[in-house]
Each structure stands twice: as structure tokens, then as C-alpha cells.
Image 1 (tube, rainbow, N blue to C red):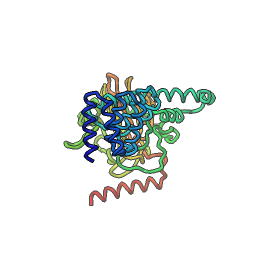
Image 2 (image 1 turned 90 degrees about the horizontal axis):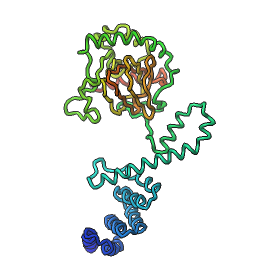
Image 3 (image 1 turned 180 degrees about the horizontal axis):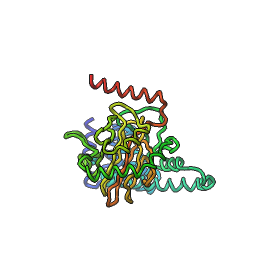
Image 4 (image 1 turned 120 degrees about the vertical axis):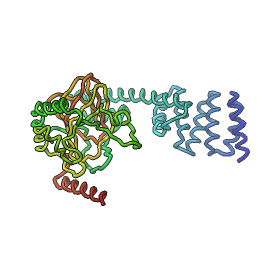
Length: 383
């Protein structure tokens, strides 16, 4: 309505002149005419805040949110009022909701308030975490001999210090498989055999690195024009290089001939047989001061084995909320469809043998069917 529009415009001029009291009177009139007008309610809340009437400002903002519960500015303003009043717990709760819908590229005027919101939420998470830990400290001490890793992670997530990580395969999800960041060793009785061959495998890898480095290629190779997202720094970069023995289900005969003992060892293991997709087995070389950014793999039907071959200090790994460091002579198996990242902060190269095996929770029938499914996918694309 024209009358409301004029009241809004006149109030805006008064607010710009810092005459909030007069602007408030006009906006009260506008709100009486159009109580569900979000713009009126937000201007009304601003005028109330400028004269120090925070309670009235909250009433106006709640009216705006009643019309649009997902109005980011309204949520941010409401949290800011509680923040100004020193009610930080209430502010953090509302800031937390506002940040969920915050614009990815906010205008300059919003950058400082959004940063303040993140800081208040982070401080509140620390306070909640400390409170929770204190609340269960006696029970944690009672069960000190038990494996409490899952509970500790649940506490971190509940307090807001960590986010929940679930499988997010880029390609194929097999449902109802246990989402374990790292798998218990007992699922892979052949790990000791693999670890016992570390010196043999390392020797063949070092020979290839020394004599045939040209056969190592950047692991990340997006074509021109493709969206690279987090891979911009590693795309076509030798900072992360690989030498494939198997690639997308196909054995690389020439490379395998260079590493016959490693090939024999791998062939004896239950590598994931998924035509056109898996297994993949490779020597992975990460150059000094290089970080592999957070990412997820393509399918949870296979899981990834790491065997360290050359391991300088300051090399770290994370899968979900589980942070670990490699140890020479020890392999691990993890689900790469859970977000993971790697860092080599040392001044030397880090080298791993990486390959994939079947997820241990798939039955023999399911494995055979998954393999057939990959064949069907290939046939469909060819057709």
C-alpha cells in the first residue's frame, strides 16, 4: 500500500539522520497497517535497538520471523540483540541457526557480524564441551579401561566441537554398511603378511622412483574447463604423484613387470574386483609441505589400505573426526567415502602403497552382484 511505502521511506531518512525515536513512531504506524510486512518489522527493530529498547526490538524481529522463519538478517539481528544484552547462550543458539543459512559470499557490511557469530558459536561449543565432560567425568573414570572413542566423538559432536561424518561416495553407495572411519584389524587377517613385506615393497618402489620417475604421474588430472573445486593447487601437479600397478580394475602390465614381488603380494590379497572401477593399486608420493584437501572417495563397496614405505616425521591423516599418524611397519584400512585429508609437513617425500579391497561387511553374493552391476554400467555407457 502507498501509505506504508511512504512511511517506510520517511522512516529510512530519519534513521539515516539518527533520529530513531521519530522513525520508530512512523514504523509503528506502518506495522499497524501491515503487521506481516518483513521490511517494516526489520526497520522497526532497528529503530528500537537504536533507542535502546531491546525488548521491543525482539518483538518486531519475532514478527518478521513469523512471516519468514528463514530470513537470515532477521535471525542474525535477533542473535545480535541477545549478544548485546550479554545473554550469550541464547545468542549462540540463534547464531548457530543463522550460520546454517548464511550467504556463501556475504556483502562487506555482513562480514564482521558473521565472523562475530562464528566466534560466539565456537566459544559456546567450548563451554558446552567442558560442561559435558565435567558432568560425566566420574563415569568416564569408572570405565577408564574401556574403549570410549565412540562416546568421546559423540560428546564432541553433541557439543558442536565436531561435525558428524557419514559416507558420501561420489559414485556408488551400498546402503547399510557400517560407516567406520578406520576398520578393526581383525577383519583383515592378511595385514601381517603385507606388513612383513614392507622392505620388499619399499625396495621395488625406490628403484622405480630412482630409475623411472617419468612413469610417475600427477594423481589429479582434470581436463581443461572442468570444475576443479578444492583440487586447483594439485591439478596436474607432481606434488602428489602416483605409479599405478592396477588402475580402475585393469592391471598395468608394464608397471607390474617393474615390481614383480609387489605385484605377486597384491594379487594374493582380496582386492576389490569391480570391472572398470576397481581395484586400484599404486605407489603414492606426496612431496614436502603438501596437503591433500578434504575429499571423499567414489564407493563404499571397497575400502582403502595404506602401507607406509617412506615416512618422514610430521605426516598426518584424518578420516572423519579420527586423526592418526602413520607408523612404519603398520598398515591400516579405512573408508574413503568418509571425508578425509592428508598432510606432509616435513621436508622429505612421503610414500605409501595404496590399494583397495572389498568392504569386509559385503557378503560373497553381494560382491558378485556389485561386480555384475559395474559390468552393466560399462555396457550401458558403451551402448
